[in-house]
Length: 585
Image (cartoon, rainbow, N blue to C red; front, side):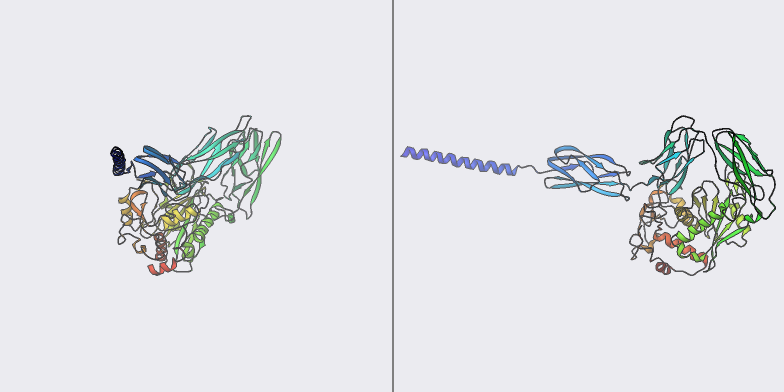
């Protein structure tokens, strides 16, 4: 019995010792368990552009981890792992409009860290046409399309028979592009592309030119000559030889040709009668004849040199004067009915007075005139004789003096729209303290609400600065300060102090919550601020709406009332502005 008791005691001791050892072992294991750690090699990722992009960051952890993204445009791979690894972040193309920010969240045990990912706003780039078809003849057909962009771009063709102009442009405006094809002498159709590029985007227009064929046509349906016999050019489009004759009062040069060719048509004498004189050009082509009418007008058809057309007369205040004057318009262009200058001037006046924000509500304060300047030849081209096209460029001061001679008593507060017939336009010059700015427009552009709102109303009339970025373009802060000392460009600021900034009184005011300090303005990305994120002085938004920020609206309102001699206050502006300060941008 004693032996059995000893054995039982030993077994009990062994069992007890095992339990103790097991308890000690498990206690030590809990005490020595791994504490999770997590390190990321970067906290932010900035995508400078709106296109898709692939970037990476590193994870270093001593435990298993996972990565999560809660944005549909931001993707991560792999989504799980352990230890040290590289995670790939793929960002989709930004077609949403505004700049956007998301994050990739890394979780390792109880630790959570994130990598912020930001992407630039959508860059606007578009061609007005995606495909066109041309005939087979040299210059017999042209592609006319527009480039819409808010950044700098380049333009080129992929075919040596297709030339495009201009080859480049800058953002903030819509530019008309002309592409001209050479004659297709091959037996088949040929294809090319017009390609416009920015740093991140590309847009194309496919061009298809028909195969060669026998044909004959004219570039216009009629030749118009003035009572004084101004010449006109007629394009003859032909793939066969031709000869031409005219009436006894019509002269043509040359009288024979082949292919696409321009002939000069002129009258040998003035039309002193009281009605149009009519004639015709007769072409002999391959044994048959074709005629095109020639009409010579009489004196009553035309606006005379230094005559002015009153397009609007003020009914409130002293009148806010705007003068439209052109160059490169000969007597035919200055016809009273269907004349190019008359038509374009009326379209510009209507665009300014009827569609432009702020102005359209105060249109009864404006006097708008169109001053007729008759050039010896049509078009503003190298070598063409015009009124103001000096050897080194357009003489805008001469155009202003010409206007004042035509309309005696024009005040210093007058501003101008200069219309070049066929010249490059789309820009403007600031006025001085009293006004006197000038917007430069081209008949090739087509009357544009954007040009009217940004170039003429913004720059020339109200002396507003551009609010987009084009670093170094105008000399930065010193230039801006110099302009502001002349009461210009008060929609940009070199300070974020509300007490010093031009738009400080808007900040914190109910209804103007969007007004603040947004870095980037007067072409500079840093250290110059604008009052709102969006404005027509930044560029045209995707919805095409003309929107001025609150400070710009105030400056336009102030300038109109000051020139019209009508008392105003900031409080009267706030009442006037109620329909605008809640407007969607």
